[in-house]
Length: 305
Image (cartoon, rainbow, N blue to C red):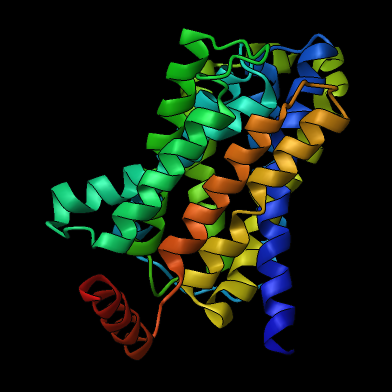
């Protein structure tokens, strides 16, 4: 496969995540609760990823390693819990904006825990992302956007848990085959969801049959398919380009919320989405040092003149 094939695979993985919020909203409108939707997603999604794992490469793991991967799945489950809670009171186009705050939260955690001070380029990109988020949330312009305090809190919690998931997924089980690792982390997420929500309604056959189509779709696109696509393509495109490609989640979520859910997305919100994507791209582009030096020299000479 060529490099652009792998890039397309990673891009599609991001698109899968972007579809979720719209179908969660559709499930809510069909009368299902957040417990039923989240529970069915993780039950069916974990089942699907384990079916894939049965036919993929595996290695023998020790009990401590299995335990670490299961614990690393806790943020996976919490992200689903928090994000789907935010969708109860926020538009899908707005909830995704709060989730995307993981970009600067991750940089802040690196600074605090690993003493990794962000460079000027990253600080500029974070500034762009924050400005874009303010515009996309309609805080300044209003524009008919309903901003729920409870929904905002849940959305920001989902960003924090998603940041924890990113850190743990890159540091735990590095030698474990990707599909096997994803299956164990998904299992940890499933256990978390079951402990938090205790979706006992799913034990009733009519409820399970009714929510199953939503759960199967959300489980496929939110639990099973993205880890598989990322495991295939991410190692070939690299983390920087991979981060840019997975940002496809944001425009897909906003576009679907406008087209399928008929949510009002005004011009300033679209501008905010563009700025957020621009901030992510700016943070992950590696500029050649020679170009940066020449650009600095040119700007200095202009100032002196």
